[in-house]
Amino acid sequence: MSIAAARVLVLAATGLLALAAPFIVGDYPLRLLVLALQSAIAVIGLAIAFGWAGLIQLGQAAFVGVGAYTSALLVLKAGWSFWLALPAGMALAGLLALLIALPMLRLRGHYLALATVGLNVSAEIVMKNWAPVTGGDDGISGIPGVVLFGHEIATDRGAYFLALAFLAGVALFALALRRSRFGRAMIALRDDEIAAATSGVPVVRTKVLAFVIASMLAGLSGSLYAHYAHFIAPGDFDLARSVTLLVMLIAGGELSVAGCIVGAIVLGFAPEGLRFVGDAYLAVFGVGVLLVLVLMPEGIAGRARKGWLRWQRRQHARAHG
Figure 1 (cartoon, helix red, strand yellow):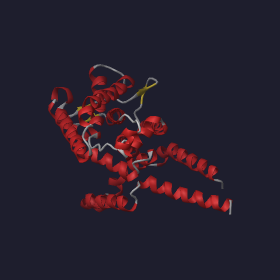
Figure 2 (spheres, one colour):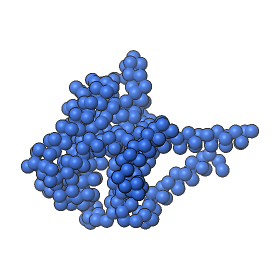
Figure 3 (tube, one colour):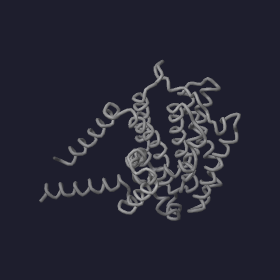
Figure 4 (spheres, helix red, strand yellow):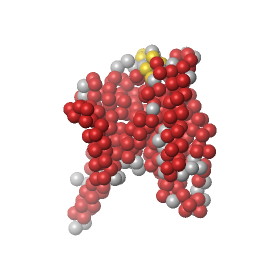
């Protein structure tokens, strides 16, 4: 089999598996899969800020929460449709990111990490204490589902295809962004900020734009989550959630869009797969993450790509041997 044919076969098999998944798995695994696809959108955003631009972002869940609360409130209180509330949630998440980016992104390394931690903690405090708007610890319930062509998407199967469609669009956008001039500027900035600035890369503008794009994708993820779960509360967007999104990114592969999706799915199913260990779940989960980081520092997708490249080289050697 030629390399081109193998690549087409892998892509076709992946597409068919994605389309067939909701007809193969049970109700509970399907729900986990929907949540994983929604999380993958936020993880791709995190890849843009953290993996590509080198910004240590530990507050991604805060922007997921902004998108979720904005979308839910606009639909419940203002009577907006989901299709208007979703871009509004993305826009507000992006605007907030822009307002805090200029002072925050002048920090580097662990100082930036601590600043984003403070951002997430502060956002959770606001969500808990602004009770007249956010509902406080009680959250917001009764959030309507997504209405498409006059019919509400009321099944997990429908929610899966909706999340899959949005994820596919975000993945294509991220791939195009990675290959663009801006994408190359982000990679250069991550590798060596001083060298990038010397080469003419606008450092501050590139950082700010990467941060804003990442936050807007987080807002998109939050909006989808709110209208799927029909209930949101501050605990859904706490610091632990941000850490989980970061672990999804690193485990899957921070430089790969496919890795973001793989990491979100693997980590999304981890609690169910490790249910048999009972109270030792956190310990086993932590050890598993450490093993991935030690044995596959490039992530699951990165290791798979290395295997693919080795196979390609062997095929090329055979063809020209």
